Amino acid sequence: MASYEQIFDNNRKWVAEMTAKDANFFEKLARDQNPDYLYIGCSDSRVPANEIMGLEPGDVFVHRNVANLVNNTDLNVMSVINYAVKHLSVKHIIVCGHYNCGGVKAAMMPKDMGLLNPWLRTIRDVYRMHYDELDAIKDEHKRYSRLVELNVLEQATNVIKTASVQQCYLQNKYPIVHGWVFDLHTGILIDLNINFEKILKEIQKIYDLTGGMAAPSE
Ligand code: CO
Image 1: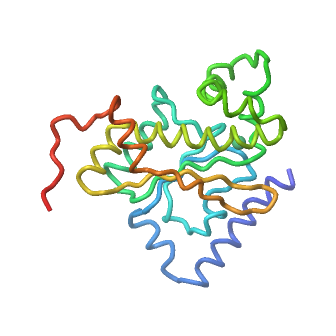
Image 2: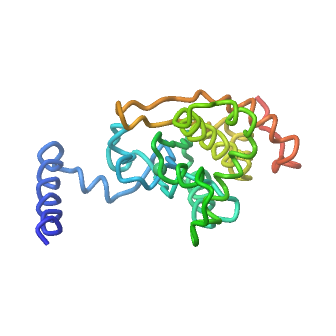
């Protein structure tokens, strides 16, 4: 029970600290949110979104699930993206994976994981899509790390497949979609430098959902 009670002590200290820095902090916080970023990351307790980015409450809209997946039929992540793009007008969408991801590790094991099977299937599909590259990596840990990166790439691509992102980008030149990996050993965030424009162009050969929309004239 001690640690549970501790949380409320921590909270009171945090309120005091924030108020000492800015007397109107909570008044401003309650007014509205206007974040520039949507962060889609892993639920892993070691990867806290705001802390690793050094951002304050109000700065980033966050969605987390096991292995930072962006599934087309997941009403949760789809609603988060739609809301962040259409109502919050976020300028950047970040898909952030992390090395040593338990979800990715589980997907690499040839094993029935029960209820987790359909969730892990998405990661196994990423493995299949990049089989030749991954199979050529003999070191298992390096292969695992590369799958973490490729999973980020594919989930970022899934974000770009959505109608809200394609339509908003056509009209406003934002949001830009990014792929990052967090390294637990060093605390460093690595930008995979995915080529947003190139991926958008490529996927729109098949997934173009801007049909009939005109870009605004310059
Ligand atoms: Co993870």
